[in-house]
Length: 454
Image 1 (cartoon, rainbow, N blue to C red):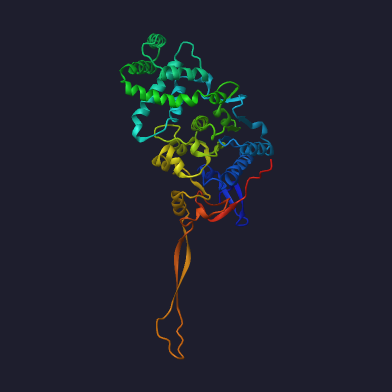
Image 2: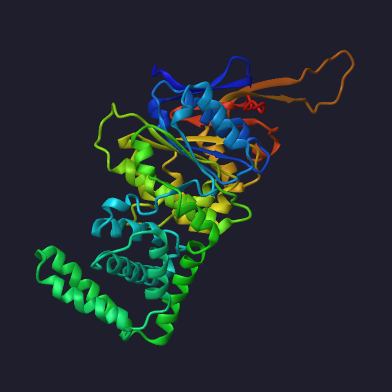
């Protein structure tokens, strides 16, 4: 048997443990259940503690979108107990430390433009009916960023990024002297570049001129998409997470095996919280996918207490959960997350994308909930077991003096679902059915909660 790397103890059945091997952990873990069912206290927080205490010294990016102090206290306590307090870095919007949205400002160039474009583009709500608009908007976004990078003395900071997006995408005028001068300078620079880079210069110029051919309706649609992106980006809270203070690179912390805790209130600041979470998640995916395939490579994990906050769909995008989750496991990356229901996810990325992303999770923990589709998944995944059905029949003969008619007993074997439809709705707080890799736990487990004493 494969040795367990993570063990979550249970009250009941006595002596039972929810065990995760290294391979199981790389299969990604998702806890499903309604509010107050125990997802955070019985699964996410104990998993965080075990991951921090792991002898493998796992690099962790922890996204705390509840910001109620529970996750922060649990992470700090676990880091101190494990002797890893020096590994802990906290970004909480105070301005002391900030998140590097560029990935690495010092080395940000044309290649970095493509990744940042995909990352920011993933924040636009996806819909199969809007693929044309999404792709056109990403093309314009890419050219706006390229114009910023290809300047003679580019200023690469968060404020400059916001200014460029607003000026070029939201308030664009083709004949504006500022951009006319930039485009003319690019024509001069083009002659001194190798052929592949010359093609980029040509694309920037052509896309810039495309603005002049767009009708008013098309232009207004693209500018509306820009507004939905620049609104959260330019909020004072977003500046507190991305601008000023000591800049922290997610890739650097992941490679060093450190613990980066990012805390933001996702209830009061939903749009900015999604922005911060998606940027951190995207940079984590990028850092893991840059690794060489090596089974001995130290693990790197992303812990997200509320998956709908940062879920991204779509195809052909490095930062989509559909594609990234399928690839990061081969390079030692994994995701631990939770969600109240599948319906909440469907409202963000749609049913098809949610089903495609859900297929990447080998570990599913089912807490109390009333989502009909979760009921079906639990019933199908956890299978059934053998049981006996006893039928008793009575003779319909008239009673006669001295004659006793005995009932006839028939016994037969049947298959019974381990988790019948509706069983999840009747679970108590902290109880859960589980599927970890190939190991099914068809009997309801009562997981031991995280110790609330800090």
